[in-house]
Image (cartoon, rainbow, N blue to C red; front, side):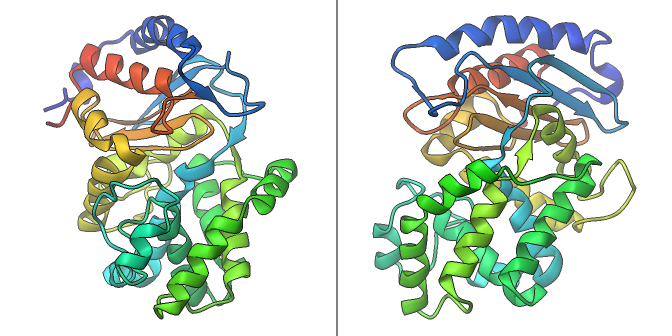
Amino acid sequence: MPPAPEDLPDDLTDVLDEVAAEARPLAEDDDEVAQPGAGPERFALALCELDGTEHAAGDADVGFPVQSVVKVFALTAALRLVGEDVFQRVGVEPSGDPYDSLVQLEREHGLPRNPFINAGAVVVCDVLAGATGSPEAAAEAVTDLMSGLVGERLEIDADVLAEERAGAAMNTAMGHLMRSFDNFRHPVADVVDAYAQLCSLTVTTRQLARAARFLAHDGVDPRTGDRLLTEPLARRVNAVMMTCGTYDAAGQFAYDVGFPCKSGVDGAVMGDVPNRFGVCAWSPPLDRAGNSRAGRAALHLLSERLGLSLL
């Protein structure tokens, strides 16, 4: 089990600096794929303890689009509003296919494998649209949730949103395919656009570490004391993060890192260590699974250094 908070070293910031120095050069591997324009030289690592104490290394306050990490907060918002009924329309199993695959959807009659592939996230947004009254209100609910967790209002990057909208054909196709199997209720274009808006929210590494803390605190936001999820539901989100949160490399993350994580294609990997802290690494160059190479290495080193693995 991970160490108790009082057993963590006093020099956590020094530990993060050391881990960052070791992990950062891995972003320069020629075999890796960087998001266009993302700044391959960027690297950040941040940790936020339950009492609010923050530790950071590198570019922890540089903003970037949240991308797929937002799926954690969309699922949380849906669980808050409809409970486990959301899992009648999306599963909790690893997909084994690319995150934007249509093949599995057709084979499994419009039921996405889990909430952290694109089809799953889009149908979660459709569930939220039903619970809040509209796709626009669904996007606002997730934005409000995240903003409350970081303690600052998050805003959409207009340029990123334009790119998301221009590249929305596959997500739109997924929506229509799910509708053909009666697993979609609202106008597909509106729901897909709500999801695009959420992916375009600008966040920082420090903010994501802060936002993840409620999952490390049995569903309670340590900053406000507000219960966002029941303890069982918080455990379920963590379980799906552990098994499905890092595309087709979830097994490798469990092996290397050992605590729940969710990655995004702009290079963020957000995680939480139950009863300890929220954590996030950010480095834009991606490996072939779509995860940050240096980010994964940093979390592996941090886990090894501090004995954080839950497994």
